Image (cartoon, rainbow, N blue to C red; front, side, top):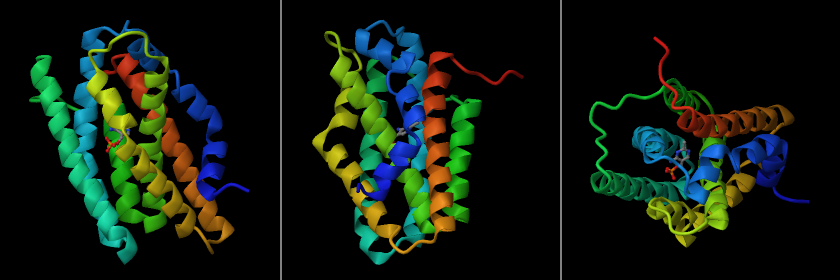
Length: 216
Ligand code: MP5
């Protein structure tokens, strides 16, 4: 029998399959993504990643001692990632000033914060696993379907690197350990949060592909 993280992926498999190969990812892979569409995603993801720092910090405050060091490392990696965004933005003429979150980005960030603040550590940690696993699998999909050179290679490399893969494996294995001895009710709450995370990940690509804005 597989670990609990495999059970979560199984439960969310239809959403996961819809997320992988979403037309936004397919267009990055085949090189037909309009630069303006990609840049709109860049702005939203920058705002998302910036808010991942308080999200991780709240999780850290609730973390068992064994998870503190790896979560500290993850916080450090976030700053490097923001540097990558800033470097890519400078290269392709994107400014993050005056960007505001779309409805989907805003809602997703609020969901992260509410879970980290209001729910037990295991639940927030599950959401973190879902967030990171979604990007690992999505960008691996792009890498595996890539036709020719991509102007966005630095992002592909970042989320498919060995270090990022190891981090996601650590999240999966740690989660399997954290849920040992949890009641059925607790496990159900964790599963539901994982499914919501998967839905938001799908929605994030959809937001980018459809150039979502506030209707009013
Ligand atoms: C990640 C991300 C990965 N940057 N954006 C979304 C919408 N989901 C997941 O998180 P990180 O912290 O960039 O590795």
